[in-house]
Image: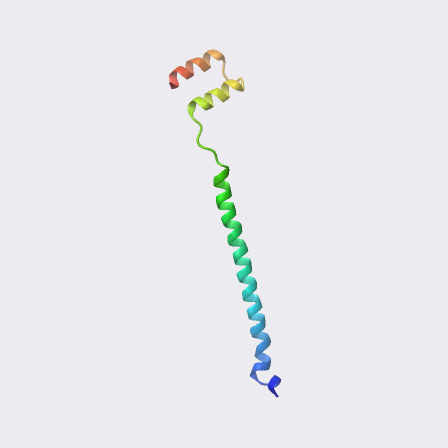
Length: 78
């Protein structure tokens, strides 16, 4: 008789809702953790802005400008 009343039929529904709720909670926590890691990981890899002299040195090292151009631009920057 107990299994045929309101409790018997509704109990499975409540258990299913409880399981779905836990699943949604776990997925939400995982997504939040992924978002936090991505948010702070991208900031850690960024380096400070390069100075004009650093850029000039790299251009000279790559052969984009001659020694004379390098010296002239270096004087202009300083």
